[in-house]
Length: 212
Image (tube, rainbow, N blue to C red; front, side, top):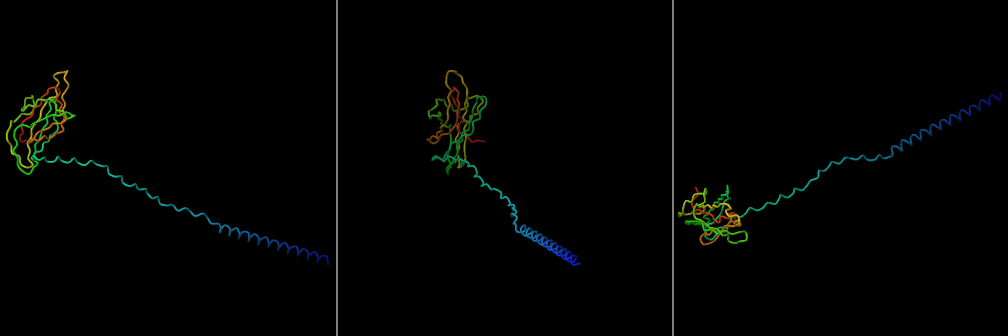
C-alpha cells in the first residue's frame, strides 16, 4: 500500500516538472517573439528619396548679331552742289548711268551746260577716253541740250552718261575705269563707278536737265 502511494507521488512530481518545463518554454518563446518584434521595430528603414523637381536649365540670350552702321550721307561741299550717280543700266553692250546734281546748301544756285568728266582706273591713273557732249551713241538717251536751271535747296538736275562695251580692235586692251570725277564749281567730286569701255575709247554725256 505504501509502495502504491509512493509511485503515485512520484508520478505527480513528474507531471509538475513537465508542466513547469512547458511553462518555462512558453515564456521563453514569448520573450523571443517580443525581442524579435522590438528589434524589427527598432531597425530604421532607409529614408525614401523624395524626387526633386527638375530645374530647367536657362541659357543666357545670345547677343544680337552686330549690324553694320548705315553709311553716312556724303557731306555737302562748300559749293553747295553735290554730285551722285544711280545704278548702271546695261543691255546689248549699251551702258547708261544717270548722274545727279543736288543743291544741298541753304540758297538757290544756277546750273547750266554739261558735266565736266575725268575717268580714272583702279590705280588712280587717267583713262584715255573721248568725252562727247550729246547723244551720238545709237539707242542712248536723247540730249536735251544745254539750258540754265535754277536749283533751290533740295532741288536737283540730272545728266546721263552713255557708252558701249564694244571691241572693235582685237589687239588693243580694253579700257576700264573705276572712278568718275565730275567737276562742279571748279572742284572735282569723285564717284565710284565702273565704266567698261571696251576699246571704243568714247563716252557720251548729256547736258544737265530737270528730270520729269
